Amino acid sequence: MTPTARTVVIETHGGPEVLTLTDRPVGEPGAGEIRLRHKACGLNFIDCYQRTGLYPMTLPHALGMEAAGVVEAVGEGVTHLAPGDRVAYAANPPGAYTEARVMPAAQVCKLPDAISFDEGAAMMLKGMTVQYLFHRTTPLKAGDTVLFHAAAGGVGLIACQWARSEGIRLIGTAGSDEKCQLALDHGAEACINYTTEDFTARTRELTDGRGVDVVMDSIGKSTFLGSLDCLKPLGMMISFGNASGPVEAFNLGLLAQKGSLKVTRPTLFAHTADPQACQEMAAMLFDKVTSGAVKIRIDQRFPLDQVAEAHRALESRRTTGQTILTLD
Ligand code: NDP
Image 1: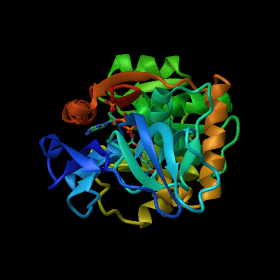
Image 2: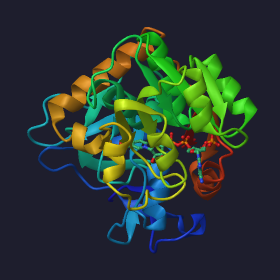
Image 3: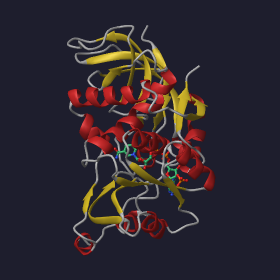
Image 4: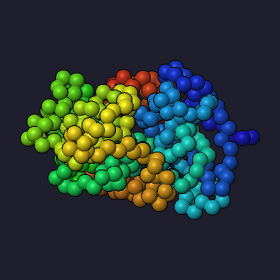
């Protein structure tokens, strides 16, 4: 009998109510694939973009990009994994909100024994994102200043700790004083409550009028132009998300007026498409976590059948740190 797994799918784009739990056949791994049984799944804002259709996908489709579990079977040509291995991943295609699946093996990484399944499920997508933001996007060195929006969120709390571990001065923003305190506790040098303060003016004040070297902006529409005003001449704007909506078209000439600014719009999966790069990025993340430089803070756990409530919490800014879906 073909085994089945409880899996979250969407038949149409829409609100959290379109998330449906269904039994799906799991199948056997083909060449270059593995079958794995999940222990926990990670929740990411990209899952909301895919659910709403901001990032369109062919429907029906399973959702979720990140999980941790145990390899059950490997297909032909898979050499870096074997049945019984503890693993974690952030990878395409979506379909990680499930008990078990068959998927391409290249982006799946062996999980060090010191890292729990829950931590593995919570950290791969967000942690490898911080890795590429800090190491593969623009050269950053100790003493450089970064403005990092949503510093108390999933990517944010990892970024605060990562910056501290490398002597990078991170100014965070967050939506409440409590969230700001959390960012400060995790290594932000300062944190601006951007619901009560003008983050551009405050960033200028905090840098004695100079501005920051780099802005890492995942908020998009509501912060993009203000973020450009926080940069030094020749500074780098890294726009990597759209939590408030996509960035609107803007006059490229603004970059010249504000001092030859640079802008990039990166995605994790462009970096991890190269399997060797993916394994190296994961190895660096694992070092940060096993050395204690970065702690994975799981503030929310939802059973798989409460995935809609998990999406509501993430989209309504009620979460901090990491969120996972549990499978017990
Ligand atoms: P978070 O845990 O950071 O949650 C998003 C946060 O954004 C909220 O908690 C909230 O924090 C802030 N926010 C500001 N405005 C809004 C709004 N209008 N609606 C909802 N939230 C808002 O999520 P993740 O850690 O999963 O992801 C962070 C961001 O990074 C996302 O935009 C995501 O898409 C992006 N990302 C991009 C990647 C890439 O490679 N391009 C890879 C991974 C993530 P507050 O209340 O403090 O403002």
